[in-house]
Each structure stands twice: as C-alpha cells, then as structure tokens.
Length: 198
Image (cartoon, rainbow, N blue to C red; front, side, top):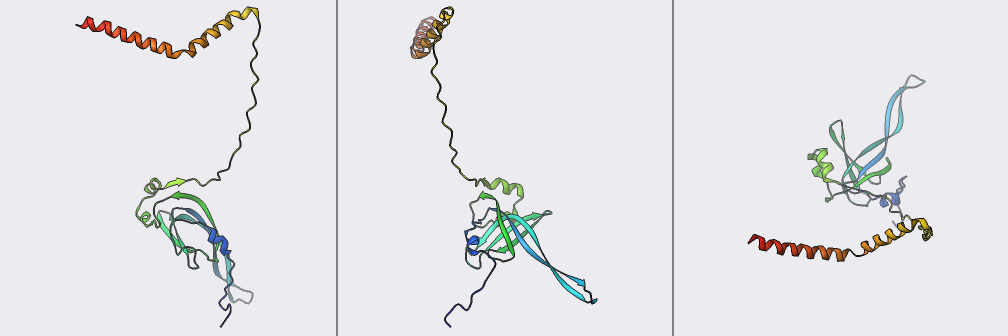
C-alpha cells in the first residue's frame, strides 16, 4: 500500500501547539470542552439523550511535561481545590482543549515537580522565583532641550553679590589644599601632645 492511508484530520492547530512553550513551573489556564449528556422527555414521551457542550477553565501549576512535542505529548497540571490537591493530565494535541493560556512563569531547577505534592503552598511560593516575561521594548528618550547660556546681569547695585560668588568658586576648586593643610595641622598637634605625655 503506497499512499497516505492513515491520515487523520483534527481541528487542532498543530503548529500553534508545537510553538507553545509550556514548561514545569508555569502557571497555566487550560480551557477544556466538556460534553454533558442529559435524558430529556421528548414529544413522544420517550426519553432522549441530549448533549450539551460547555467550557471549563482549569488553572494550576504545570508539574510535569512528558514526551515533548510528539503526537503523544502530555503535560500535568496541579491545583488545590477546597484544600484538596487535584491533578489533571492533558494531551498536548487534544481536540477537547479549547485554549491554553500562560498566566505566569517561574524559574525552577527541576524538570518534574513531583515534590510539590508533599509541600505546603507557602513553601512552594518561597522556592519558586517569579520570572517576569514582559516585552523588553526599547523606549526612546526625547532629546534634552538645549539650555541657553546664562547672561551676566550688569547692575551697579549687585557688584558685591557677583564678587562673593566668585570667591566661593575659588574655595570649591581648591579642596585638596585645605585637606592637606588640615592633615599637617593634625600631625603637628600630635607631636605637641607626645612630649606632654612623657
């Protein structure tokens, strides 16, 4: 038999699911289609089975990823509901999965987080380092406006003020000289105190 005899058509976008990077330590929200069957009385007073589909969200921590991106790939999600731990294993390419949302990513050092089953939620939060997965957009800062040079005001009444600012700038430009002088003065004082002690 030469030819594609075993072709299966699915409603799943396989390329999108392969590109989805779900790892252990991620918090994901998986929206699943659930089909419910009810028995309803029909017009002929006979019981009919009625099927209804609804969407249910299951949000939790991915504790394991198995078989990679191949056809049988799965991921295990764990959440705590009413104080009880609940785990579900989802096939990666299942047609019953409507969408998979990545809520939060945490940096973990294990591929399988089975040890979390025995830990309390407080200990888990301490262990897992939250990694922020934000877009690193380059923000351009606007160029600073050029500052116009200050003009000297020629006023005969403020000549003293101009002279004092000039003298303060001289003091600020020579801090090395004053520090050397103070260190020399300290050495001289120490020498004077030493003969007094004897």
